[in-house]
Amino acid sequence: MRSTISVIKADVGGLAGHHMVPEQLLEVARNSLADGKKSGIIEDFHVTAVGDDLQLIMSHTKGENNEEVHSLAWNTLKKAADVAEKLGLYGAGQDLLKDTFSGNVKGMGPGVAEIEMEERPSEPIVVFMADKTSPGAFNLPLFRVFADPFNTAGLVIDPSMHSGFTFEIMDVYENRIVKLNAPEELYDILALVGSIGRYIIRRVYRRSDEETAAAVSTTKLNLIAGKYVGKDDPVAIVRAQHGFPALGEILEPFSFPHLVPGWMRGSHYGPLMPVSVGDARPSRFDGPPRICALGFILHEARLIGPSDLFSDPAFDETRRKANIIADYMRRHGPFMPHRVESQEMEYTTLPSVLEKLKERFEELEE
Ligand code: F6R
Ligand code: MG
Ligand code: MG
Picture 1: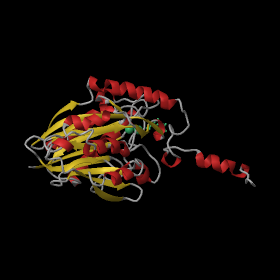
Picture 2: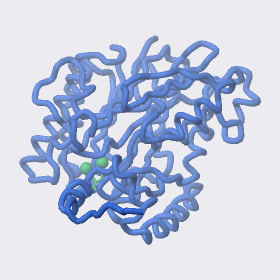
Picture 3: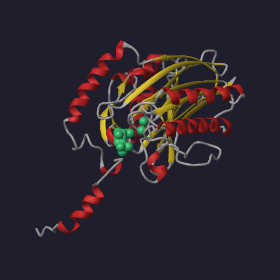
Picture 4: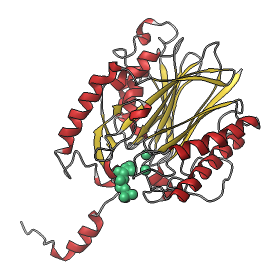
């Protein structure tokens, strides 16, 4: 049967700052999605939070970009935002940028990742959710999962994966996409996706049958709103096993806490720390950036699970290393490369400082 998994998320208000989503909001979201399930819009759901982002994980049979499903998600986030407002939570409704719903939540603020698929007899799925970073954070790990044979043994030894994967890469500044094939075009892929602020891996397809293997949310809130209104903390969905990378091959790249932009005021590079959902409450300098992974089985459009995949001592050393890297990066204070490039900064006083100093700059004669 054809099933769809939709992950729609937004920061609709946090407790004690841009820190965590309190139980009251999770409860509103659960009740709202339970109504949606009762009325047959969705078949199943799981509500969770990573940092200050409320995450709606939904399964259904209505396909991607479905108006009813998106409307249910939008109304659910709205209800949670109303409660956030009543409780005086910080940044209530901050990611909900439009007042009226018009068919699709894309471009309205929330992050969206969806995959419609022909369900296999067993359909293992990983849902990744990050806080205090942006969609480019997935470039390095997804490249490694789907193109690096030193990470993914299956690329070498599983006949069903041996022909490789196609990367759909989005240029977020020009709003265009390009599809490139691994392994032949590896160097072209890397030439683009190494620029994590501009070229974002948006989808990955298996080349043998063009089945979708992965989808990433590519909403850039700063570009939507014309000005920066919040970090576009990304989500991603990856299918696992039997012709796709094994669960452990999908998680393996996250054992390296690579540097991603985000963290304090969306303006600092820091290590991406894999944590359990319970530990996704960034506090040190509003970070460091976190990534959570929930494992599900999608069966007859129902969600079985989840398993909290980074809740594993095998990632303890990664977390320790991330803390060491966080210390090292913090020692740079306001200096690059801890601070991001000027055009990527969520906040910047640079234009006003330059304006103020305009008259005091002198031409150099030599
Ligand atoms: C980063 C983030 C936080 C805030 C910071 C200042 O994505 O959400 O680091 O940028 O806490 O927040 P405001 O300006 O709301 O006081
Ligand atoms: Mg926030
Ligand atoms: Mg957030």
